[in-house]
Amino acid sequence: MSSSVASAEPTDLFDFVVKQGNGVKGLSQLDLKTVPELYIQPPEGRLDKNLIVQEESIPVIDVSNFDDPKVSDSICEAASKWGFFQIINHGIPLEVFENLKEAAHRFFALPNEERKKYLKENSPTPTVQLKTSFSPLAEKVLEWKDFLVHHYVPEDGEGSKFWPSVSREQVLEYMKWTQPLIKKLLVVLLKGLNVKEIDEAKLSLLMGVLFVNLIHYPKCPNPELTSGAGPHSDVSSVTVLLQDDVGGLYVKGSSKDDDDSCWIHVKPIKGALVINIGDIFQIVSNDRYKSIEHRVIVNGVKNRVSVPVFGNPLPDAVIGPFPEVLEGGEKPIYKQVAYSDYFNYFFGKEHDGKKTIEFAKI
Image (cartoon, rainbow, N blue to C red; front, side, top):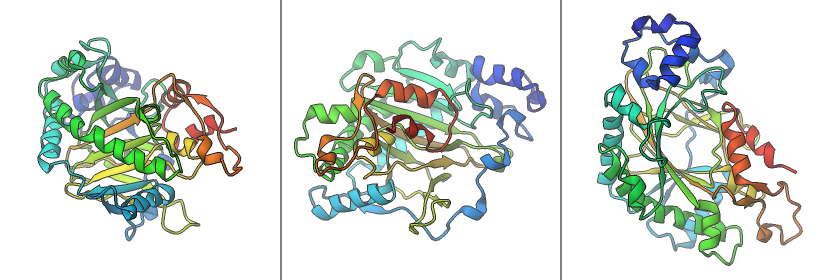
């Protein structure tokens, strides 16, 4: 398919991008002058720059001492008020970050045919899969991104040995550092909910499955018309995000309690990780912690990569407000739901803000 792809019929374009597995990366290699119609968001789906609050930023927390009550209080306060915060001095070497970002660029620089080896129908292992957009079969307008999903199982050499050689070691090294960090965050957040017994079973409920994605947002000829990720909240317990220096992540909200229509740019900080509360923690905390809408805007001159790690419950886990949260007589806002049902509901539709959590409400 030539550069005429920009004016191709949507069905032909969908076939090229999704069914043939070329992705947005394949499109970007055609030297497009204009973005194809299939990627043009309606006006209401674009970020209104008048709603960006320039003077706002999410909290930045020094976690060099997780045992310090002030650090714990700062984390729990950020989880309650903002749902998003950045952490610094977390102990992960900067070199690990840089190697991982370079590995992500290397994978998406591979020829189309090499990347296609990791499409669902081709992948040598179910623990790695190449995808595009968010949920292409359910979306009216596709998102301008491709991503490589890894199901991370510690000490599982069988699955990971089939991961792409250009990025495998860097992903595994990163996860060796990140998994214990997620555990530390969960312990702090659980203690903030007065959960006294924090054992492996409780932690497994919240992070029984870990996914790490290498996300690639190719530079776009008309970035103002497109979306890298539409407004949504995560269906994780907690998400740990490494972003590069290009920027483009926006979080909904403001320090003003009466204004939740604004968008705040999460400015990249060298060596920092972005932490956000997912829907599952909002549910188990009965709304004490907040999962917040966020979105990604693509760039017109640079490729952007980001690497989120999602701590998810096991598929057969049943999620609802923790008994400890309801001890004082507080009424539950959410029912008990199977996580697999919640997960499938989220991925069965396009990004639609915070509507997924309504699925779990009483």
